[in-house]
Image (cartoon, rainbow, N blue to C red; front, side, top):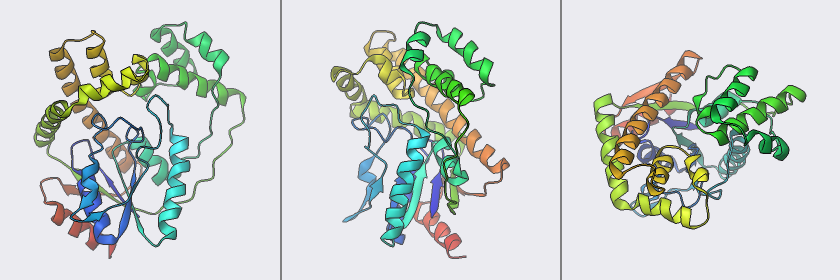
Amino acid sequence: MATILGPTASGKTELAVNLACKLKGEIISADSRQIYRDMDLGTGKDLAEYRIDDTEIPYHLIDIAEAGYQYNVFEFQRDFLKVYHEIKGKGSFPVMCGGSGMYLEAILKGYRLIQVPINEERRAELQLLSLDALKEILSSYKSIHNTSDIENTKRAIRAIEIEEYCAVHPETDLTFPTINSLIVGIDVDRDLRRRRITARLQQRLADGMIAEVQKLLDSGLHPDDLIYYGLEYKYITNYLTGQLTYEEMFTGLNIAIHQFAKRQMTWFRKMEREGFKIRWLKGELSTEEKTNKILSWLSQ
């Protein structure tokens, strides 16, 4: 297997698709938000990129859950293994592609996870509390390193639910096989990455990203359900509900995406410190040059 990772707007999908085309392979998405249907522009699915000339490159784990659902890493591992074995069984080559560090690491490191059921009674109690109070409860169980756990009340409640379940249940491991993969990262110059992010945000807004979020709200999703997904869905929902002006939305979202890309790179560097070998390619290289380099590594 090959894994293509990198920050947002680094050109991961184009490279992964080109590589899969050369290898007669299939893409397994490792993006924590592209799994949701009807969330296309905001998650950057760019599905047109999965076609090269007349060849449609098969992809998996995109559009597999309804918007509003809270998909988790346990489910991703389960669904990954299913499609991974299907791809291998057909004699095709799996190419994992994404920027969600926890999803990538869950496969490459083989996290052993437990599936924690929802505790409706406890949730009802916790929903009465402020986010600050929830943070205090969570910090009594563990040191809070993953700030996404406390990004909003829904995430904080789920994090508390998991910690409290683990406190009273013996941990049961999920057996996960060793997945051997060549890991390739795309390293884009910071200034170029910033320009790409801003240009892409402007393009997606022009393509109808606000209308996409409005349609989700009109379908019956509560604003909090969309804010849960962060970034585009958080800022645009706050704009549509009158919490932000357009300028505040654009400026805040643009900054937030830049910060997100920086956190992605921090995660990847952490993976390296923990022993993962990531072979970095300069983002300025052409797709063909990058692909040929990866093919040479795979043939060694």
